[in-house]
Image 1 (cartoon, rainbow, N blue to C red):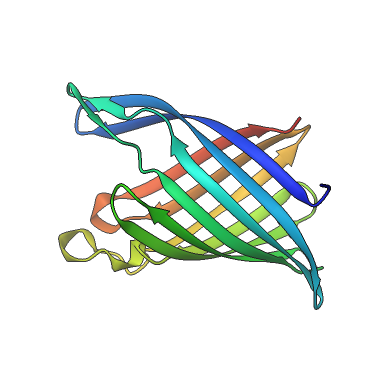
Image 2: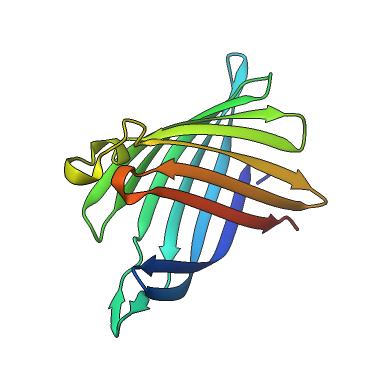
Length: 170
């Protein structure tokens, strides 16, 4: 099936709360199917299962990773702009969110990204100290079969979340 793509991601997770640190490893599984041309662009659909793995241990306690089931649609325009709409469900917490994102390819090696996640913007009370909550921005660089991705998401009084990933294509 040439229009079907499958992927697996292995990750190492580290979290800090105060002076305590916890570690674990997890996997993501995903698929993407190219639906074909629609108007000037091309549409694709995807499904993913994220954070499959053991819980994270801190202070002699274990907590489940936030298992996420996701599905979405992407629309790629001919001038390098891709827009996407995703729905994510987290069965352990009973929460869900809708996300809207965009990626602008600046040549074959650089992508600029920006998006909004609905649940991040719904946080209220003492932790919501920034109207930027829910927004995220980042970039990706590809070279020699490798990729580097970075994103930053403001979380108000909780600080900012920075994500960095390295990838290899084979």
